[in-house]
Length: 274
Image (tube, rainbow, N blue to C red; front, top):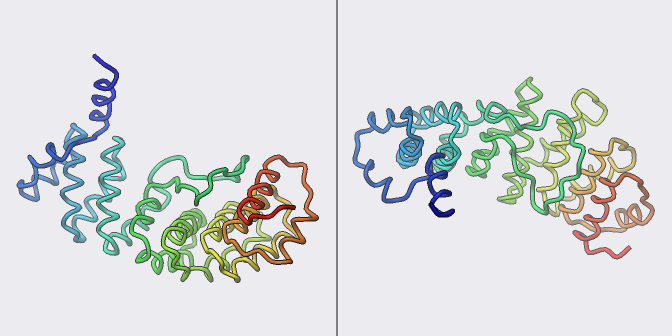
């Protein structure tokens, strides 16, 4: 068997389907489609997720969110996420309830390496990624979540999601809550991951002077390497370049290789030749 065929079989085992495969189920009754989400065959689960996504209602949202919590097959998870993302605002409350629950690679401590990609970092939580697909309609709910939830981990995931949506849509309506979260946690060592995620979220607010001013203030006293390199990275992404920042960068020195990467990156982002 050639390599291409082997790869195709492996993708099908993880739930990948074709439009032709999907078409055979499109006329089934709703209850039959719902039962397919429990089928042992991941391709059938993918097909069911795609079909349910075409009818945005609270019942289908709840069913897909419940299925996504337990789904292991890659393409089936993708189909559920895409269907919920396409449903829009109606899916947001259920997805917020799942923040931090889908996946096991969410950041729970400060990173040891600088994030080298040029865009906004990928959310590690599937609910967060799905909310980013919903986009702008999710922002008011996420703002409310940060204000009201006592759970720090949920706040972290909500801040991360806001950053992704802001980067994607350039709707900057959440800037005040992210700034507030940043300022509230600067001197709280127990919430260092929340601070780091808030600083990272600010990178999505391009040309926003309020975000810029907060980050510049942090440069004066911040000593934790992950927070410092994330602050530099976010300033580069915000894209405001003035005398205050260029003076700081001209006098900046570090022996930390990860902070040096962030320093080199901000020079590129701002087209500075120091």
